[in-house]
Length: 383
Image (cartoon, rainbow, N blue to C red):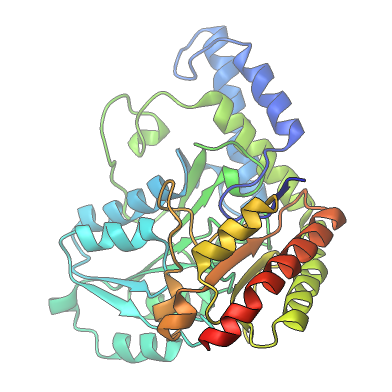
C-alpha cells in the first residue's frame, strides 16, 4: 500500500499537463526569436499568460513567469525595496520561509503582524499600526500576507488588509501559493499589488510559477540580461513549464467544486482520529480553512515519530512545511498560535489533493488508528 497525503508540499502533475508539456518539448523555438519557430513558441507563452489571467481575474500583461512561489515573493519584495519608498517590512507571523527569510535578510527593519490562536491575521493590530505610521520615518507601508497558510490552511482576510494598506498609501503582497487551484482566487478583487503562485501546488510542473504585478506597482528586475518578461524577469523562458502552468491553472480552476468537496473527507479524517484520541488538538479549528488541509497534534506523540510510523505503514504525511530539504521539520506556526512546547513538537499535517480517493482516506484512518493503538499506552504513562 502506498498513499500520498502531502499534497500541500507538492501534488501530482495532471496527465493532460504532462501530454501538453511533452508535445511542447518535441518542438523547437526560442520565444524571443522572430522567425516562425520562435513566434510559434511566443504564441504558446502568451496563451498561457491569458489562461492565468482568466483563472485569477488579472490582466495577462501583468503576469510575470518565474520558477515558482519562492522566486515570486523574492521578486516582489525586491521590487518594493528597489523603488526606495519602503523603509520597513511587515510580515505575518505565519508567512512561509520564502517571505520571512527574505525579509530578515533584506537589511530593513521587520515587524510581525500577529495572528489569533486560530491562525488568522489580527487586522486590529494592523489598523492601529497604520494609524501610528510616520511616512517620513517608516516610509511606504508594506505587508506580506499569505492568502492561505500552507501548514494549517487558514484563509486570511487579504481584501480587508489591502483596504487598510491602501488607505495609508501602502502596498500588499499576497502569497497565494497554497490557495490557487483550491479556492477561488481573484487578483482584482483582492486589492493586492503583487500576488505569487506556483504550478506544482495545483497539478502543474515543479519549477514553474508566476507573479502578478498591478500596473502601478513598483517594478525592478531581480537580475539582468535579455529583457524577457518586459525586463522584469530576464532569461530564456521555460517554455514547456509555462505551457504546463497555463493548462494546469485552467484545469484546476474549472474543477474548484470538486476540490471543495474534499471538505467532507477532511472532516471525516478529523472525526475519525478524534474518536480514538479525544485529546487531539486541531490547529485553526475555529477559522475558515482550505478544504484539503488538516494540521493536528497529539500531546506526547512527537511529530517525527508519527510521520515515521505512518511512512512505515505506507502513508505519506508531513511535519509541517516542506521548506527544509530532507528533514523532518517542525511546524513554524506553533509559536505563532501560542501552542505549548509539548504540542508544538507534536504537530503533523495531512493534506489531500485533486486526485485523492476514498481508498486513501480509509487507508489513512486504518493506519493511523493502528499506529496510535501501539503508542497510546506509552503516551498515557508519560502524561
